[in-house]
Structures are given as structure tokens and as C-alpha cells.
Image (tube, rainbow, N blue to C red; front, side, top):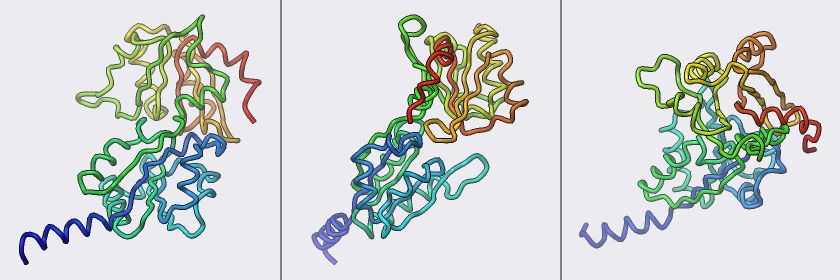
Length: 264
């Protein structure tokens, strides 16, 4: 086979590839799903979805589409990250529209950037469709504005999903404590004791308000309101569990006033 034939064969193979859409499913309420994302679900050939995508969003998927659960929950991984990426590449070689459905927004603690880069490296056409991230939506449904002229003019979003006692933790909690008036923490319930201890050591007061919002925007949304010094004890007493968003700062005080106006 000559060089020209090899080049033509490679080009033909690339032209046969479908397109992968990294779609943000939003936080759970199907009304918060973007129109573009909904349209792609309705015409998709394959949908590879995460564990935190709500059942109401799953119901939007084309009934004829192949549905694959690639969800990752603490201690229960359906597929490893490398397997998920390889699966997307393989499905793009067989189908026209492949949707990678991710909870919240693909580029906010969703590994969307990693997946997109790997797909492009494999020669697969890919597009991101943003979604409403739970760090914004869950507090809103709990009546907690992340900014407020009296309380906060800045917000920090940070992952709490790192093991306590890591040799070199990637999150500088001392810097986070003083970086803004409102701190929003994703995936931090399992490390709550460590996180609150680090924030207090960094100078935050024990009476700093904190809110935990579980299953934000869904009908079964739960909230636990407290202070940095006592929230761990409250979690133990109530049995409050992940998945939940944590909001720390004076804006949590607004919950008492605004929580009665929960969206329907």
C-alpha cells in the first residue's frame, strides 16, 4: 500500500466518526435543563450518563437510544475514567450523535476538560453544551443568594473531594478562607470535619454560618443550617448524607428570610 492510499484510508476513517456532545444535565430539576441539551437527548444515538443525573432528565432521552450508565459515586465506580473515554471514542466510530451526559456543568468539577482533550487527541469531533452547576442552583433553591450587597461581593468554588491527610493537598484551605466572602464547596460531606477544622485554623470564626444542601433543586431537596463549630455534630445527629453542596459565609443568613420562596 502506498503512502497516498494510507492517507486516504485514514481520512475516510476520520470522516466516518460521529460527534460527541458533552452535555451538562444541570442540578436535577428537569426545568433547568437547557433547550440545546434537551434537543440532543431527544435525537441521540447513544447517551453515556453519570450517576447524579436525575431520573427526570433520563426520561428525556430518545427511547431508541442506547443508554449506558458510567456513573461514579464514592466507592462505586461503574466505569473507570479511561474506560469511559475509550467508550465514547468507540461509540463515535459507530454512531452520528453520542451524548456524554454529565450532572451540573461539564467544565465545573466534571472532568469535561479532560474528556474533551482526549477526544480531540483521538480525532473525534466534540462540542460542550454547558449546564447549570449545582453550586449556583442548589443555594438558590434553598433561598441563599451567593452574593448580596450587605454580605458578599465575591464567591469561591472549590472541591472538597480530597482525602484528609494527603501528603500534598491540592486545596489551600488557608487561602480559600480569606479569598472571598462566600465559599461554595462541592463533594465535601465526607471530609466535612477536616474542611471545617482547616477553615477555623485559617481564621474563620466558629460561628461562621454554613448551609448544606442535599439533592439541590429536586423534590427531595434537604437543607441543614448551622455554624462551622457545630455542623459536624449536627450531621452526625441527623444522619445528613452526600451528595450535597456546602455554602459558607454570611449569605447563609438569608435562608431564614428567603427559603419560603422555593421554586415549584
